[in-house]
Image (cartoon, rainbow over all chains, first blue to last red; front, side, top):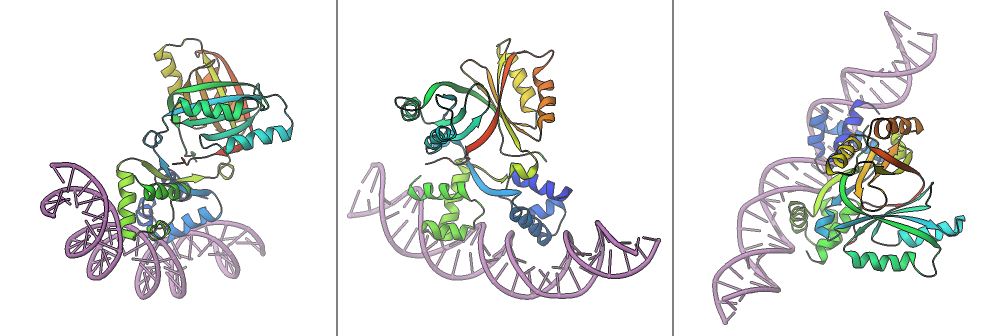
Length: 150
Length: 150
DNA sequence: GCATCCCTGCAATTTTATTGCATTCTTGGC
DNA sequence: GCCAAGAATGCAATAAAATTGCAGGGATGC
């Protein structure tokens, strides 16, 4: 893991669609050496995966919301049961168990408020183990970064 | 945007490193048709970008934290000033202005608590416009999904 | 019914990825 | 400082993939 590897990772985190030939050129290596480095980075797991990032607005998911959830019962099995419910939801893009005043934080990507309403029904109402939940609708996304600075 | 486009998007959101030939095979198109579809999806912006996702743990960023921030002064310029400060930080991977009890929510990816301490110094202490902030350390990541279901 | 437009597959061509191999570079031990 | 072992590099040949032109098929609107 040297300077060239870091350079490759930075390039790939921005745009992994460029060709190996172009990458080799940018870092000053031959295509074969460059390819072997990238393959090593993938095999060792530093590069987890290569994916397409869609534009949420163009897919109809125009609303984002953060929800903090406080459970009534905090045991491991109760926590797991709720998380399993939550992660099965398409609108839930992130789900974390956290320290602090609340137990779980969810990030939602929603089509509209109707979807939010239905989701609340499934996750938070009635017989579930929810003490309280607070919803923060996202007004502005200032940063949303998949890349990691090396 | 038909069934095949959706299939392509789902495939690419999982693994964009496969070849066009393989993709064409999976959706039952010829490579040339498949390529033209993917190019159209990129040109129209539905596919925003293709990126490498790194394994945070292998890059030394082993801690995650969510921070809710309440500002003293809520004017647009004050909000913007704080957000600009926050998004300039490498450890801040997501930053949102939100409705509700707090004004801003940050997602942090940290190397250690020392980095957190230093970050707090820069963003929250002293002369800044911070009324309060609450930190939730992530205990468990149950879901962290870049893909959008179509 | 017909013209138009879009999409498709095929085939030729260009570009890229991949691999073996000889050489160079780096590193650790002495 | 010198040598040996392992790792990384560039080159060249080969295989595979991407790209493009073109002709045919199907849907759409008039």
